[in-house]
Image (tube, rainbow over all chains, first blue to last red; front, side, top):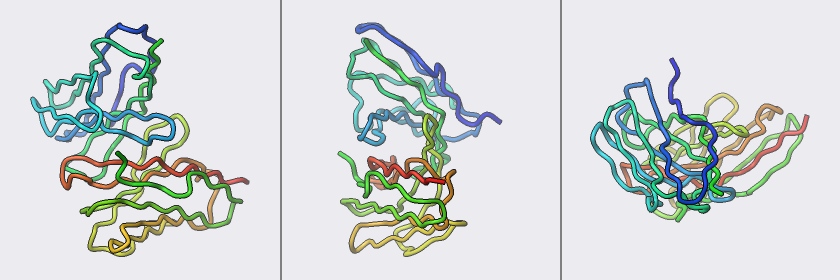
Length: 112
Length: 111
């Protein structure tokens, strides 16, 4: 039982490159979230999904896109990476709204 | 903007002492949660307290909630070196769809 798995764990990009972060969960949770964590800023919500085929914007959605084609997967895409997107990205899941969140181990992204 | 703000930002204590962290928030909530994050790891849920509860216990953890003051506190009793971590409070800002997190308290427990 892996829980919430994020890939890749580390990535270095050049400004303007694109990439996709994958979050996979085996808990059959409906809700999935993408957060970014920056020093001193806590976690900020980028996008979230309340079920397969749905997505919604969070607090800081600009520069990111997401897709939830399958219930178990939530993808976060950066179409044209910028240095301001250097951060640690966390995926989280929830069986319902604002219950206990289950987090992945994080994906550390550096944009040069 | 951050809904929850933890205080202090950093706390250093000796093993065996108690650690108290506070969280203040701005708007009405349905529940407040506390999470722990070890260095380089994901967050782990510790405890959830609902708006109609005033106090909750889980092992060495005690959480209080004062909705009139819009504040919560997390008390870790008889701390251990393994309690060294960052602690975050989270509130359901939009009452249903998402949690917002504070900046966290970095706790160091010295052996």
